[in-house]
Image (cartoon, rainbow, N blue to C red; front, side, top):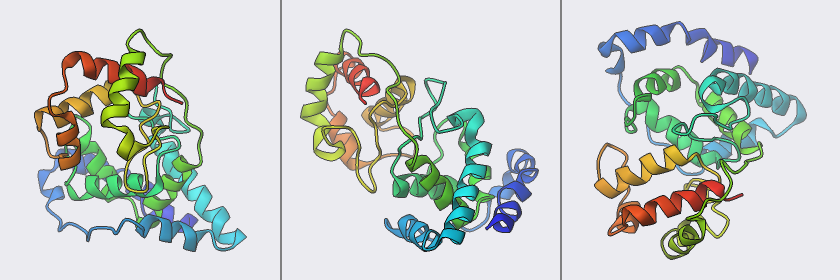
Length: 226
């Protein structure tokens, strides 16, 4: 597994400069879509015995070190508009990495870098770093503000059905509890305005008619959940 990592992500880091400078580098055919359980299947196969598990865990740690400058060493971002990854659902993270690599997810100022990075990663590396983040503990991004009580009511009415009363999400739905407020605001605003490439009909429906005041309150509550 160590060799796989070095020949995958680490061995391709210098190539990221090419990805960022050469539009032609992004013309490769997209890889096949992952099924919702693919990441967990890779994790299960790689952790079947102690020897394989140790190598797989090490791979996840090494990939996370590459991601640490933005997402934090253990997946807790220090920047409000960069998402926390700690305790995030394995299949959700794996699928987002896949979407970055194919260009299906391309919103935000960091999408070009993320595409180059994820295209340099093997499937095992994607699953390993997703599993690494899933094993970390999440923390609230901030203490509840003045609007948190209102935000809880908005959450219960609009978000609880999919994300749960604890904000943990599900296999293909993200953990949102304690998420960075800037990232939450950016994401919710994108769904509300239906802009960018990352659209989801269920979220568009949830955001329909949401006022600015309700969105501020919702972000206040969700970012303080733990």
